[in-house]
Length: 608
Ligand code: M6R
Image 1 (tube, rainbow, N blue to C red):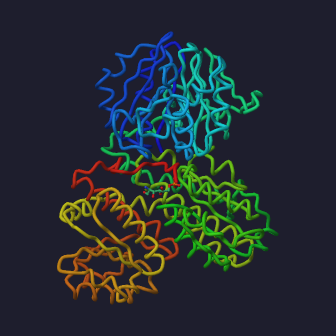
Image 2 (image 1 turned 180 degrees about the horizontal axis):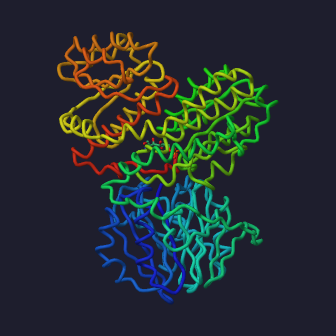
């Protein structure tokens, strides 16, 4: 979950590294550090706290001179955030500096071995063992030492490494943690993610597990563990650097909420051609579709919530049974999955450790894996049989909004594709669904046009201690996401319940003034939901309801109502979620929370 960056060229490295780290802060932000190689010495500065603290300390990088360096922004796993636990970590003689993203699972064993060889440790991190281990194996050849070290360690890693014994060189290697190489003109970069280097170059290599990067001057080599050179394809990034900038908004989150109409349109419209769904990237044949026994949808957090919507939608349109599971559960529960099953992995980052492990588990058992991923070239996309990209563009805010919304569209596209192919959707239904789905961008646009009522309501409710979300059917699925959004950025305790479950326990939590957010967009369940609203009102709750335009009856019961434009109920989640995102955002802003970087969280959860 940490971010790493490295530079080698003829410019001063430190300001470039700080610039790159700023773009990676979404990956972790409890401490930061950089190490610069200047001839035969390494200078290093690292500190607990946000990147700004480090940057101020070294005057925007001016204090550290040298044209080769590595940098790190941390999300602590082993050892509390502190100056000493911050990266980079040095080898015992200070000749090697290393930054790491991932977890070294057998670090205690290695530590014991190194201690018996006279090494002493200054930090509580798992990473420090690796800088010493490389030193331990170093015999004049850095590549050999790195290969020996990665053979010895278990876990996940992306390392950036410099050494005073190799004054014009930069090394890197990865396994199960993302790492790219940025190819410039006479200068090169390594980074955890594209935005870190996008202002310098658009040409990148995506690295596979255990590929070792050796950059000497301007020469970039990628080697395998047998030291054979690997021919890499250059990937040209075609999205605009401004896509990863705030562009005048106060936070990335609100910018990304506002980008949803375009993100949805980009994800859906190119895939509807001549009155049909065209999923060029999916190689699943008609025969394979017709012999599908079961579909699993797997993800974490919001991606899992998309899966919950996906279950309702796919089962309805294809009549194939769907199970939706948390990746962290699926991977360890010996699931009954195999040939003839389709496993859909949903992930914005494409790097989530549990989702990647679930993918591998499904493949080993013979299932076909289709992933729904936003980050092009990410591990999950590369390891899947088929990929359906969500064209949301870079999502920087830790709380997902536009990625969630585009993932929902992927669920519809997959459901329609399968349902049309297995004959469960008639021509007439197909026409109707295709027409409806294409109205989503403009309807989301209409919701975000006037945020004032939600902004105003949030300014009255941001002091709430507990907030409950209720819904039935697809509204329940969206309630799960609304509740997560609120709690992760505003730190208000919140829970989502299927409204029918109220009487089975949760209603005892309702007291005078408790805020209940009731989702009532599903026509067939509207009356039932109205009854649930009455029940909580009778116990003192204040109710904020979301309903479809025209269902004004709700105003008799609810204290505050937001209407979404009329749409086929199946697609309502795409609209309902938007006021919930806005409400969470404005509550968090009112509370003075760090909206884009909520405490304890990171955007890309590359550790278990
Ligand atoms: O990158 P992924 O989609 O795999 O991430 C999954 C979750 O970590 C993510 O959705 C998380 O729950 C977000 N913070 C929610 O806003």
